[in-house]
Length: 96
Image 1: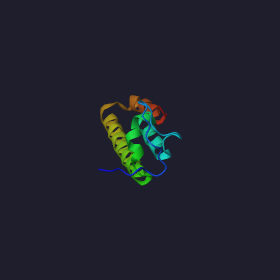
Image 2: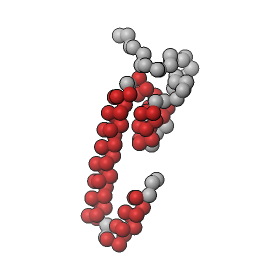
Image 3: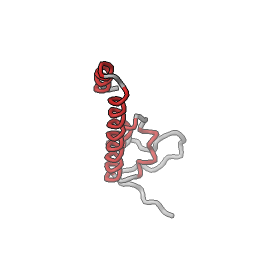
Image 4: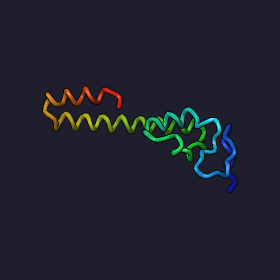
């Protein structure tokens, strides 16, 4: 099954442990890695995807993260007394 190389992708090198991309990962892949709190090199398999698919994947991850954050906030509101809730909400607003 022949695989067509992605546009702008460097040829795969024989060296193990490298990403095979000389210029670094695509901006979409870097954004995905930041959102997932993972090094971009760990998502090297996604480098073969076209930029449109990476953007779609990033949107899906963002939506899932927003749903999860809303769920955590709802559970906190239901389980934490209001004085402590305010302290926790202030901490959640700060970037990690």
